[in-house]
Length: 455
Image (cartoon, rainbow, N blue to C red; front, side):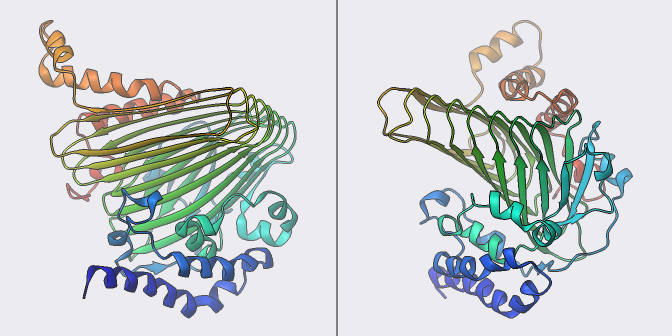
């Protein structure tokens, strides 16, 4: 069988599976979610699982990740969080309002939603879509299945996730921490859909932690839509720290209204294959968008960060800084696209991707892009790929610092620029610790347990 035919058959496998479980997907789900399934499924049929011929996925081969025989989770399971197990590992325990999502299903039973201020809603998407469908109708319109086959697949299969609503003028004095837990007795494919709405003048700090409790093959295909109202402030942190048999495809779509400020931080510390899609539309004047990412890879791990920022209104600012440290035979990719539309004058847009290769076998692909249709703008982009500066290393060694320690110091300094932008102080300190462990070659959460060197 040819490679091309094998790839077609892989897409057909999931197409056939959808038809097999279609009745189960529709059963018990809300009208507003079911209304999108059939159209999204047709879009997935047309696009299929993306290959390298898809320009947006040209640096990432998803087909090996979809090849195993996965079990889907189409119904809620009654799980409770084992906090002792979770927090003895590398998910940081902070002074936060905790919530849990098990295999794509929000757990109200394990979540401390009673601690939230009046008017703030944190609930399962399943419940909200039935009880408050008007909220979804108003805000859920950012992720277009026709533009990305992984969004199409998510829309066709997803039944739950979390819904977070912060009403006008509410300022949360405590961050919300949501732990996405993958746990099962077999290989699992999870589709999770999340919606976040922060209304006018409201402020939110949100931390998402990806975590797994055993060494099965896991594939997570999640979509998160974020709406920031006028003068709203949102800090969105994502900590990705899973084992080498985990694949994470995480798509985040953000829309900002005038005078809003949204900052995202993505720390990818461990995982077999990670694909982060981050797409912003600055849809009001005087918006500010800041995007930071730090990634550490070794063995044959792969991480691909794809960003897109659309400056749709004048007087807006966007800033992107992504850094990658690649060791052994790992591979990485960064594609950053800035589009300034015709009427978005007085735009300031900046993008930078810096990459540090620790071996001759590690490889990095980087593709910064600018599309500028306005004439009164300040825009720049840049990328570097290189190894540790030998002159700087010699300088440190000449002052009595041994080579291993000197290399560690230089790598920490390389990562520090991104980490220092984390405003949530306990998280910044914890990530500093995790990064230091990662750079020393100490493996993450599962590596401290009984899984061994292959995780």
